[in-house]
Image: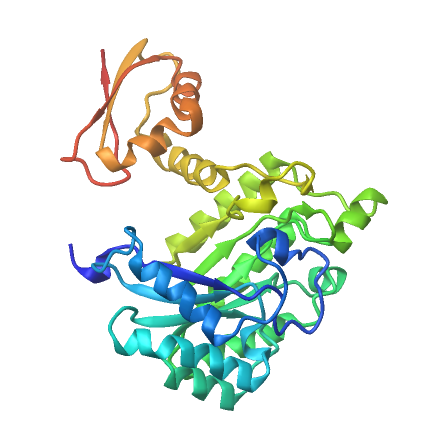
Length: 344
C-alpha cells in the first residue's frame, strides 16, 4: 500500500483556548483535552514531538502531521505563532513529519499569517465554523458570521491550503432543518474534509448554566445519530470525507459529572457509520417473510459495520427481513458496500 493510501498519522499538540478572543458557550477545552490552560512554548512542543517519534506507534510508512488543536492558532500573538512553527520545523526538515495542520476561527486570519504558515509547512487549516446559520451562531455567542466562513474557505484555498470544517449539530437555536441547511451550504464550499461534533453539555460552560436553568435542551442520542448519518451520507456522496464524528472520550472528560447531558456515547462515530451502512445495504436484503434463515456474505472490512455496536446491526437485519441470520461470512470477491444474501 502506498503512503498516500494510508490513514494519516497525526500527532496533536494541544493549545487549549490559546488565541481565542473569548470563551464560546459550549467550550471547555481543559476538560476536553485533559490539559491545563496556559501558553505552550517551543520547548514543550519539541518534547511532545520527541516522545511521538520514539513511540512504538510512530509509523514511518504513513503521512505524518503535527496538529495544533484546541485554540485559535491564527490569533496567537505573532511571535508565539512563529515560535510554535519554528519548534516543528527541524522535525519536518529531518523527515519525521511531512506537514502541519492547525485549527482556528474563520474570522481570525490575515495575509501575513497565512504566508508565514505556508512557509513553515502548514498544509491544512481546520475552521471551527460550527454552523452556517446566522441564528445559531448568534444564539451560541460565536462572534462570527456564516459569511466569515465563506470568505475564510475561499482565502485558504487561494493560498493552497487544504480546508477542514468543524460542525456542531444541536447548538442553541439549531434544529434538524437548520443543520440540513448548514450541510447544503458546506457542500457549496467544497472543503477537503469535515468533522461532526454533536453538542454536549460540559460542566463549567455557559451551556451548562443554560441547561440547568431550562434555557437549553440538547439533542437526544437518537436525534444526533440520525442527523449525523444524513450529514455523512450527503457529504461523502459528494467526495467530502467526514474524518471525525463525536468527541474523543479520554481523560478528564470521562470522569463522572463532567458531561452533564447531550448525545454522548463512547462509540458514537461507529454508531453513525454502522447506521449509514445499514441504509446503504437495504436494497440488497430480502423482503420480510421471503426467507426464514439467511447467510450474509460481504467484504471482510465491512463485517464490523454490518454487525454494528454489540451486534445491533445483525439484530436490525433480522427485524427488517424477518429471517434469522445464521452466518456472516467474509467474501472479498464482493465490492465494498455490497452484500450477498443466501437462503440457508
